[in-house]
Image 1 (cartoon, rainbow, N blue to C red):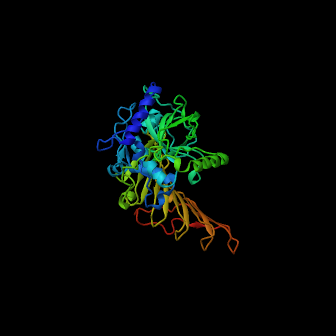
Image 2 (cartoon, rainbow, N blue to C red):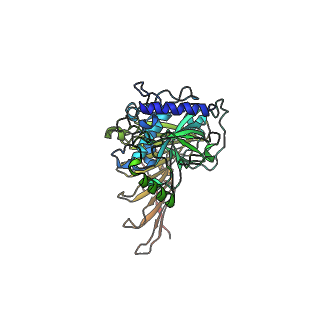
Image 3 (tube, rainbow, N blue to C red):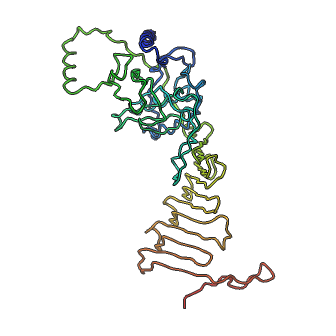
Length: 445
């Protein structure tokens, strides 16, 4: 209660001095209707999964594990902020709950992470990726269609995560959009302004609210740009060697004269540590699958072992922005006995490209063929791992008229072999009876 009273006094002074600014997201109600400090809602936890040790895996996992709920109304702060464990159990939450869970996991993994409260564009707040290029697609020509005008531009409230440089070999400060799990630089134009940010140790208010995100100074220990709430906590002030030595000497001179209650101690987190079962972690998504629509692309992800063919991702690429005219699809697989990794299928030509990982008995890496052609007229290309086969074959081309084989590093110095077929044999009245040797092999004279 002392911390709540302290925050009320801070808000009273803040509203008096910054009466033109919007309210701070400092002490919302939890799922039980009790007001709690946002700093105490963060509970640093490291989950017992070795994949969740680095921020890319943590952000990607959380973006798929939870269902995203938009703020209503979009221009106002949420009234409640549930505990991170409650959010994980119900598997959905708004942007502030997303950021709180992600920040708890990142701090538990050793990162210097903060929850950010600010403003973003309509597409970011709605998690609308229809104007974003899919990261799994290489497109040569992209039309720059702009989204329609937004009547609430600059007023849509949003929350994301900031990771400061320094810890875990992070060289530059960057943002993470928790709803998608994608990292962005601090100059990203989809984030507009920042009101405040916090972690489990302190709360900081941006004193340059008129500046855009790219123009801000992210040295949060600089009181000219950031105002802290709890003076006795981690202030992120960077001292030089001389300043640190003088400060240490000054504290030593005070000795027993230093008052014990000089600063208010921030309460510990009231939330339970994060916990996810192995079954829920393996499922990855609330229903075992998810679908995202990008620019010219629809991406479907599946948890492992959900599909009998081992498919874990399917990519639909379209030729129009409305995603009605499909161009090609790419399926990705895992844990298959034939080592198949991906299958490309072109809708118009019927061309199929299958790629395999190493470890097959025949050492096949790629298989190109066509789906809409008769077997005798179909062309085929097979690429093998070099230096693995006993016959040193690394490429084989098949067509209706020939078979070509390419070799490398053979002891007999053979590098190429071609077999050509003659014209097809004449079919008799009975369709089941063919002339002998209907496709004779032509041998050079």
